[in-house]
Image 1: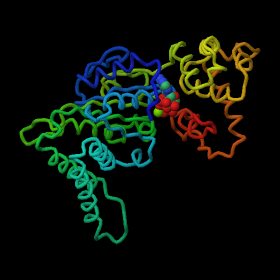
Image 2: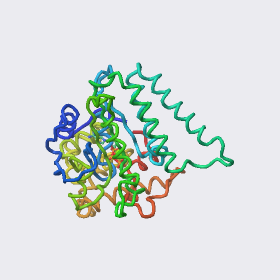
Image 3: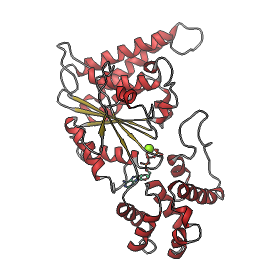
Image 4: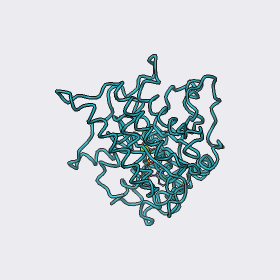
Length: 364
Ligand SMILES: Nc1ncnc2c1ncn2[C@@H]1O[C@H](COP(=O)(O)OP(=O)(O)OP(=O)(O)O)[C@@H](O)[C@H]1O
Ligand SMILES: [Mg+2]
C-alpha cells in the first residue's frame, strides 16, 4: 500500500516517472552498461535497500501517481513475490495475475482476458484428465500450456487495443525470487530468477502477425532487499538496465516523517530533528521509534540519543539493533503469531521489515 504521502524521495520518484514516460535513465538511477550477448530485450530497473528502507512505498506511490484517479495513465501491474502464489507459481500464475490486473484497469478487456484464463484452466484439465493420480504437469507440458496461453493473449490484443499503451511491470519483494534461485549454477535462465525476467521480456515481445508490438511500451522495475551478483556489475548488467540503492532519508524528511506518524506534542520540530540526526533515517526505524514513543515522554526519547548509551546508538548498525531489540522486548508481551526469522540459506535479513509491521501490536 502506498503511504498517504511519500516523503523525502523526490529525486527517486522523478527518476521513476521519467523512466515510465520515455524509458530514460536519470540520477539517482545509475545505468549499467549493456554487455554483449544479453538475452533480454527489456532489462528492468533494480531498486535495492534494507528491509524497511521504503522500496515498496516508492513503487506503490509510482503506481498511484502514474495511474491517476481515472486510470487513464499507463497500466501498472504489480507482481509481489511476498505472496506465496506469485512466488511459487510459474509463468502461468504470473500471466494469470497480469491479465487480471490489466482487466481491472482496462474493463473493455476484462471479459476477454478472463476467457484466456478459463480456457487455459480447461486446457490443463484436458491434459490431466486421463491421469490416474492428480500430478503436477511436467515441465514440457507447462511450457506448452504457457505458450498457448500467451498466444491467446496475443489474439485478444491483436486488434491493437493496447498498441498505444504503456505497461509498467513492478516486481516487488524480489529477494523472494533470488532465494529460490541458484544463481551460481550453470543456468540462471532456468531458475525462477531468469524465468521471471524472461516472462516480463516476453510481454514486451508480444507481437501481431505484422510483427508490430501489441503493447506500446513495456517498462519494468524490480525492488528487493539485495541485488543478485553482489559486486559483479557485469553480470548484473546482463539482467538489469539500471540500479539504485534506496538509502536513508535526509534528516529533514526523517523529522517530517516522525511528526507525520507520531504525536506532534512529543515530536516537536526541534526534537524530531535531533532524533533524526542521531538515528539511522530509514522509514521502518522511524516507525519503530514512533511506536516506542507511545506512552513515553519527550524526555525519555531524548535519553535515547543523549543518555549513556547514545554513543553506541549513533552507529547505524548498533542503533538498528538497539531499536529492534527494544521493540521486540515489547512484542514478547503480546501473543502474536511470529514468523520464524529468515530462511536457511536465505540472504534475507533475519528481521523482516514487513514481518515487523505485520506483527506489530501498534496501529500505524
Ligand atoms: N518515503 C516515505 N514516505 C512515507 N512513508 C514511507 C516512506 N518510505 C517508507 N514508508 C513507510 O515505511 C514503512 C516501510 O516501508 P516499505 O514497506 O516500503 O519498506 P521496504 O523497503 O519495502 O521493506 P521490505 O524490504 O521489508 O519489503 C511502510 O509503512 C511505508 O509505507
Ligand atoms: Mg517491500
